[in-house]
Amino acid sequence: MTKKTIRAIDALQEAQKIAFAPFIFQTTVSLRKLGVFDLIFDKRLNGGLTIPQISKALTVSEYGLGVLLEIAESYDIVTKNSEGQFELTKTGYFLNYNKTVEVNINFTNDVCYQGLFHLNDAIKTGKPEGLKELGEWDTIYDGLSQLTPEVQKSWFEFDHHYSDGIFEEALEHVFKNQPKTIFDIGGNTGKFALQCFNYDEQVEISIFDLPGQLKKALSNIKEKGFGKRVTGHEINWLHDHPQIPKGADVIWMSQFLDCFSEDEIVKILKTCVASMDSETKLIIIETFTDRQKFDNAKFVLEATSLYFTVMANGNSKMYRSSVFEKLIHKAGLNIIKDHAIGDFHTMLVCKK
Ligand SMILES: C[S@@+](CC[C@H](N)C(=O)[O-])C[C@H]1O[C@@H](n2cnc3c(N)ncnc32)[C@H](O)[C@@H]1O
Image (cartoon, rainbow, N blue to C red; front, side, top):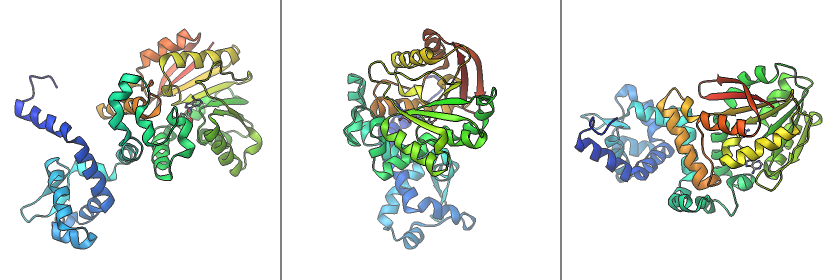
């Protein structure tokens, strides 16, 4: 939208919406938690419910419902008819029933909300200044295994939501030349490794991650009976001179490099290059901001960048594909395949 296409009064309304954005966000969280959205959706065939009816059904005060629903109506989340009955709008429906929106709401509320208050400081210092709201760590990844259960659940659901869906489609590419050994860099909870074990009876996987995540990944994999085919390597890529062994047919990095600054990405890739031979494939999975078909997907990635700024590490983001191309070449790799995977992801297959 250019500045000419919007009337001043509408622009002012948009500005006020931003001024009070945290109010409407918390209103949404509250209406979801109280069960108001569920209830009025369930009663939609009766035309919805009035505030006294909702109050009786959910034992929430009429005052409380009144303040929440009146601003929700102004934000086009609910509608009220002439009888005072409330129903969900399309936006309200997505806020309550769209899985991606749900994951984003929980992530914003449980992981980021309090820390976001420190965004301005994070921009100035280049450090994740909001992280202290969750614990005393250098990066959120150092603390992942120590987050409180609710925060941890929302973090992992967010993380998994944006990668699980493409693993199956990725497997046929990963196993094209029957790799015997795969290195999963940033293997997290071991979900991808488990899919590999189920896909191929021979493959062995080495997972590289910080100690807390590695312990969890290895115990998940052992629990599923694949303990003999996995090895774990503790690594912190932010330390000086990180190293990985030679011997991988495939090095797999899914949604991993976006946890690092451009210089750190080059350092990580160069470390991998030193361990690769001419046949090793390094496969990168990312969601690039310039490869999204839908504006809402690009917007989610831009918000995720701010999570990196204020909560995760202070210096990384969701990148444009052109930035990755430059960094990959700088590290001494060539991109031999570049294709879309699923609706949002890109797979870059690289060789020395
Ligand atoms: C966003 S998660 C991606 C997990 C998984 N690969 C996926 O596709 O869902 C990033 C992973 O990188 C790991 N990681 C982040 N910073 C790291 C560091 N400095 N050293 C080692 N691993 C790190 C995290 O622990 C986490 O498991």
